Image 1: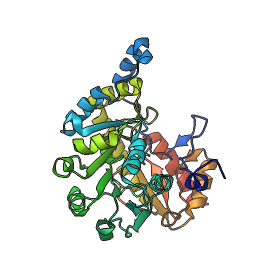
Image 2: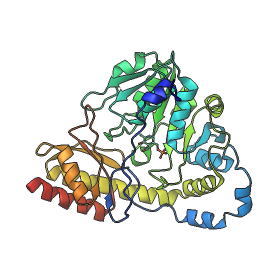
Image 3: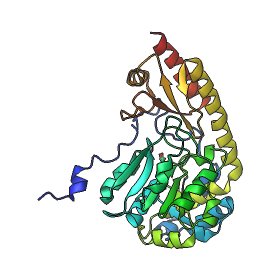
Image 4: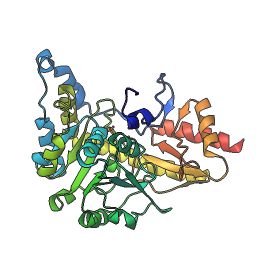
Length: 348
Ligand SMILES: Cc1ncc(COP(=O)(O)O)c(C=O)c1O
């Protein structure tokens, strides 16, 4: 007998975007924010004292819950802190799914969902999006214990209106988890649904809009009963003392956050326009990345040639995506380097 459970033995594991060792590359492959986090966090880091580290942290991150509740116009009891949004996905699968309780989601989407379903040994019901990434009607009738909708969707960057997700929440028997990891770059969000629906969990990440991917901090917004149930499956101290202090300072600095997000959104529009001028098909994005398809050159070829120029973007060799490239919106300088490299590659 092998040491591992059968589904762990069989699992390939999640494949994260490549993290190059050198810093002097143009890294547009993992949807990090190109700008630094709020300067307020450096002050907080400088003030961390040894006593704070000697003790265990606040198990529920009360300071952050309070600050996030104010920003989202909900109660602190509606917030649960997580070690990155990914941890909330793990918790949700653990809490809601098993052999008899499937998870459902539209595809293509975030490639972590099937990995977690496999580890939890639950069935994953994958409903294909249409070409425009509209919400598939069939999603409402899968009888899944957990339905996940990534909004804005990754890697398409497309957006489903809040009202459509409210109707879905209403129709579902099970829980609807709306993965809003990229919502900071969209025009609206679903936090308001939590007041009306006891089956909605919203996922938020501090990695994208707040430039804190290295910190590992995210949070859930849901009614207190769902939060209490999810807390039963979390590690006792799932967010550390430094992360709580830094994430709290970052979310309190809404002015810096908004200025930063507006810069990324403006550059996203410019990048989209310039890619279209290079004859790429690019759907309108509501995230900090765009999905582009060239009719003139194979996506895998473009990807390989960009790597030779020290420019990293993301290529997914899977159904529905193998002719497309996902490009994170970088600084203007990074975007310009990418665009001139693409111009060169397409003219060869
Ligand atoms: C769609 C989606 N959801 C959730 C996450 C989790 O983000 P984090 O764990 O960094 O908060 C990511 C990260 O890339 C993502 O792309």
